[in-house]
Structures are given as structure tokens and as C-alpha cells.
Image (cartoon, rainbow over all chains, first blue to last red; front, side, top):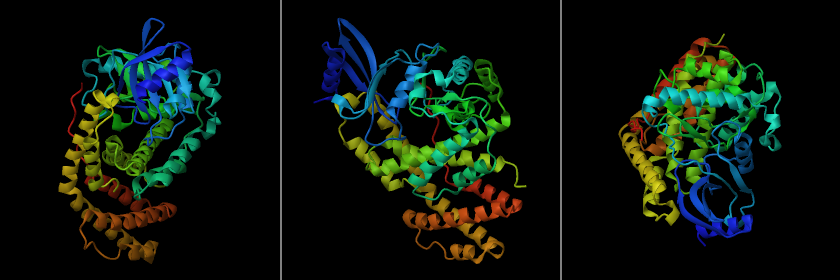
Length: 337
Length: 143
């Protein structure tokens, strides 16, 4: 039975009416889950959908229900977030857990490995990118569907919850000692940030490559919510400005805007004020989290019999780039007192 | 370091030799081929520089551990003992793993002692270590 057959059987059962699946094609990206685009003909009309199915091996271990509810939390709230359509945690006809969401056509996602990825539209896209992130930060997570499954930490525990988790990932998956990231983790623990000023939904992977734009300066879809959680809103801001996402550019973050302008846009949209010392902590944390993800990639690449080259590249090239970012950030910190 | 060059190239072979299911042709296959190309290009750099980077790093860590032993303990001198005689990547990485573990322990001891001078030196070493292992991916044009 092909994937197309399985999808037809599932959707026909779900909607209690014949559904015909066409144009199914796997799309690159979304490395934590297999991602497919397809059309479905039902009730005389055609609808474009996206399937996100759990893989055998993955960059990141995440709960698909959490991602599903993150989409549901922000769809229709003034942000370009696709509709969450259906979730099957036991896999149903598709054998592995999956969810289906609405498809937004006419856009493209840029690779972080491209130079000047947004060309003449960099500023316009940057204003929307950081503005949308500010809107996400402004929302009250307690009122959103994601609160069903995402724990709400105490304001002063956000940093520790995240750092404990990602250090644990490195502990579990590391196959070669990494003195640089270990030193960074010790520094982060020695100088924790102030408590979060509020709890927010943290997208968790808000960066170049995880949103689509229409090629004419408009952001049309915010994607890849698989690491969403509730925490300190500065976490997303630090991650979005991680140097890894802007291919060596030093004067613009994410290949879009100068850092100060990005922060100002985020502040206006969120109604929050950025404590620069706190953000510096989250900047370094972002690089630590990145290295944890690449460490897992390397392990999964091996565990999966070297079959996924994206995992191989992430666990090797990207890990080394991340080490450079970490080492330079660590070197720039004040001397021990 | 993980993954190794042999593993990466073996992965490239598997990725290219296995026929994809019908739904994974098109954009997905094109992207997969592009990634295998990037890996091949970067493996060429690793073949060119990988041994030299490991020889340098192992020597640098040994020197630091040896110099630090009078202050921080003989175990660091013991960890630094020996030299790289087998210059295969696998042997160099095995030695490197032991040296890095000792370096981590030394750095923790230095931080505990609030030894700002040696801490700064170690952080500088980290920058040079990361730079020595750097791989250079040519910029991709924005599509």
C-alpha cells in the first residue's frame, strides 16, 4: 500500500466521504518529521494539505501533539500560521504518528547557507519576521490550546528548565568530548538570567529557513513549531539572532536587519522591554541549544545507518560552525573575577 | 570527531544508490543530491586539513596540560603523556577524546580556583581549536 493509498483511506474514514489524494510529493526541510505536500479532492473541490509524519530517526525528539496545538494556537490570530487539520498520535492508517495541516502555496523558505537570502526585501521581511515574533511573545499562553500539553514553568525557572533539558541531550547523545560547549554551559549556570518578565509561547525554532515568503517581501507562513513550549520570550529572540542563521553576516541578524533595529521592532510588537544582559544569556544559550541539536544529529546519522545526509551534514559541518560561534562568544565574556 | 569522513561518504553512497519511493522524487531528491554534494566538497577539505588540525590540537592540549600540572596536579601531566604515532584519523580521534576529557577537567579546576589568567588562555585555545577544524562551505545563491 503506497502512502497515497494510506492517506486516501484515512481521509475517507475521517471525513466519512470519498477523498482522492493526488500530487503527493515529499518536500525538503522540516528534518524532524517527514513532510509531504498533496492535494485532496473531496466533495467536488480540491484542497492543498501538508502531511507531517514521524520518521524513524530525527534531528529532534518532539511531541507531534504539541506542534499540532501550537499551530492551532496561532492560526487565525493575525499571524500567517497554517490551519491544523487532523492529528493521529497512534499512526492510524499511516502506521506512524502524524498530523495534517493546511498548505500555504506560493512561497519559499530560504536556506541559512545562502548569501543575502532576502535580497532587496531583507528589511521588509525583517520587520515582519521580528514583528510576528513579538506578537507571539505578547500572547498569553494560558489562554491558548498549547497550554493543554505544555507545562508552564515559574518565571524564575524558565532558564533552568531549558538548560537542563539541552544539557541532558548532550549528555545522552555526545560521542566525542566537547570542551567548548561544556564550558559555555558552566558559564550559563554560573550567571543565570533574571526571571522572565512574563511567560510566553516560545516557538523554539524561529529562524531563517522555518518561514516562507512570497519573493516580493511578504512573510506568508510561520512553520516548524515542533520545539514550541512555554517559557521566557527572550529565548526565541536569542535563537532568531543566532549567527549560524546569517551565513557570516555581522552587520545584520538573520540576513535581515541590524540587531538593534530587530530588537526595537520586537519590543514594539510585544509590548515588552529587552534586558540586554538577559538577552546576552539567551544568545549564548541559543548556541548551546544548537550544539545539542547537532550532537543528536550525529548520533541519529550513525544510528540510522548513515542513510540521511541531512543528519550527517548537521552533525558534522553545522556542529563545527556552531563550535566557532560558541568559542568566540565564550572568549568575549568577561574574565573570571 | 563524529561523524567521520568514511561514514559521511558511505552515507552519500547509500543516499545516491537507493532508489527513492515515487513521492520522494522531485524537490526532495534534488535537495538530497545537493546535500550529498556539499558533504563531498567538505570531505575534500577534511582530507586536506583534517590530520594537520588533529596533530595541532593534540599537541596544543598536551602542552597546556603539561604546563598546568605543577599547579593543578600530576594527573594532567599523566594525561598529556605520549605523542601521536599513528596518524590515521581514527587513532588521532581516540587520543583527542582522552585529551579533551582532561582539558575539560582542567578547565573546571581553573574555574574553581578563579584563575582568570589560565581561564582566558583556555578560552583562547578553544577559539583556535574551533578555527582549526573549520570547514568552509561556499555561499549558495539565494533562490
